[in-house]
Image (tube, rainbow, N blue to C red; front, side, top):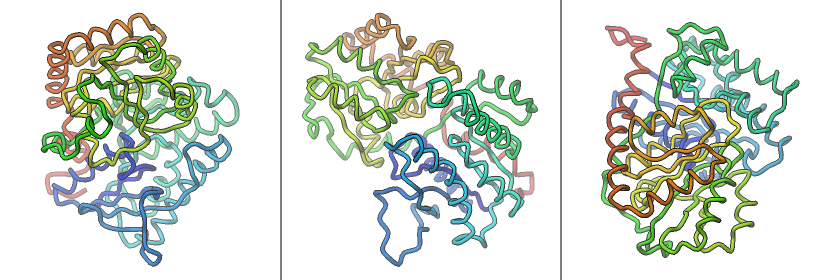
Length: 404
């Protein structure tokens, strides 16, 4: 059996989505399935002049296709990149892997423009499609002001409907998303299911190979880690209100790892603050080491979002037994999940007093941090196993005789 994962990000990109899909690919490999990944070429992936853009990485064949730069560029260039992306991926596959028929295609969204790639490949090869849906685009972009109601919004809205239609099954990350997608898109309840984010626990159980506390000169300070994209969806400007309020606190430091459209402005504005450290990139192989040496995991979402979003970084935090300090949009299912798990404290973005109160509780009580972190870990073990997600996906396509 051949499984093809189509995504715009993959390892060595440190994005949480890239790590999720790497873990899923490796889990499929454990079932002796041939796994292929169709993705974009990262700037830090170097190929020799005569090398093909496809190579085997830990038993997974990865085809990397060149695309225009997407990060830290203007909206026009970003839009052009998104529009061209599906065609570049499709023609890249046809050029280098045309003889390989994918029995199952797993598409990860966002971006929804991958619909064009999926649709063409399904028609060509007769593949079955499973969509892992994480952000409900374009509504989430409209919520944060990245897209306005109009022709562009309508264009992406039509593409969204087509993506749902071409998918045989859709996995969403929250109960609210499940209900919303079914009702708004008129989809059959049997087509859409709850599929939590997932993680491979094994890297978080190995001996730590890299001492980040010494490397970054953090000593025994309480390290509050934010790792991931720094864009409009995250509204990290509110996190920095918390950082500003606690500027004189000597026992805690905020470690911000990542990049995005808002990172340059934040770095410039807070470059003289002694309680914040910026790092653009951490090699993904050392990311579990980094998280396990921190004390609090940070999650932030824009207050104006009307759709659900449970960031993938939550998995790494709880895998590492970190208590989570979250600030999210009102009504987000993450609040209910955090309460059920007991794995952290969650407040609404914009409510600084509650946010700071939760921060102080965690900073001032190590026993509480340990207790809350362990609760999150136990919840993750029960619900977020990558092998469990793998089997959930395969159950839809494999019959008793193990044929798709």
